[in-house]
Length: 297
Image 1 (cartoon, helix red, strand yellow):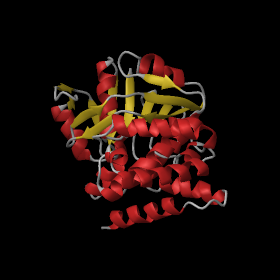
Image 2 (tube, helix red, strand yellow; image 1 turned 45 degrees about the vertical axis):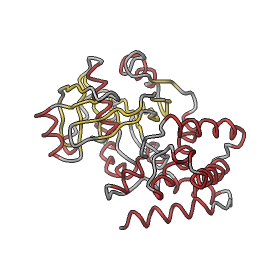
Image 3 (cartoon, helix red, strand yellow; image 1 turned 120 degrees about the horizontal axis):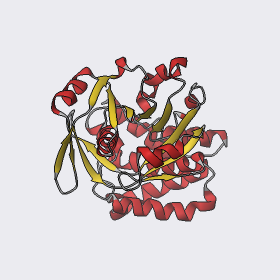
Image 4 (tube, one colour; image 1 turned 90 degrees about the vertical axis):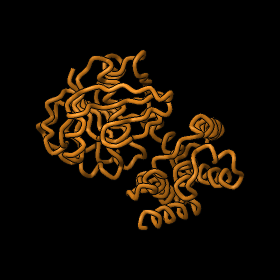
């Protein structure tokens, strides 16, 4: 089956590799023509945590050439690039089954305006690093959690697009709960690592970084009305820092490479929810401004 993957970042490349390994034909749509040309010429090299490499070949195109001819499509672009996905509003793409894999929740309002009858959302728990245009390093294995946002296509992603033995997909009934949990994790981890330039593990090893993370966690839980499961979420957050101790968050990597971060779709959303409830979230506001300063350098 031909499956479009929109976004040539680390997660997009990782998904293309596993689609190919599962005997599908991914078609990668990239922001730049250069990346598409490189992958078409050299293939994609997948590198596992033991430094073993394997190269697979599939078709890559510029996103400007997207025609929606594939029945299934995975959108892996960042929150910042969602604005460039407005072409999906065209009625000619109505028949596609789409899966959106983004950090944060800034894209949710837009999803309601899309004409597609089958839309799913998901969160990625894998760790991956893009190395150049045509290589991806799989630094942490995990799962993809998927929930139906609209329609009934989510089971298809689990059943034959990403079967359990190849690339585990877990079905979640409540998309909002799923995304809110991930948002709390991102809002607690990413800004601190970006500001301090530290990997995830330092958030539990350094007392001061740990206190900053805890304050962001408390504000995020309150803003999203998740207090009933706060203790469970804190355990999950602490465990995530341990299991991804060497990982450098996507926000930190964006700062290091001089790119715009996803702070608006993560901490910005926490602040919006807090404002609607007249809650004070001073630490979230501080880190939001601090990351914006780092972006502008």
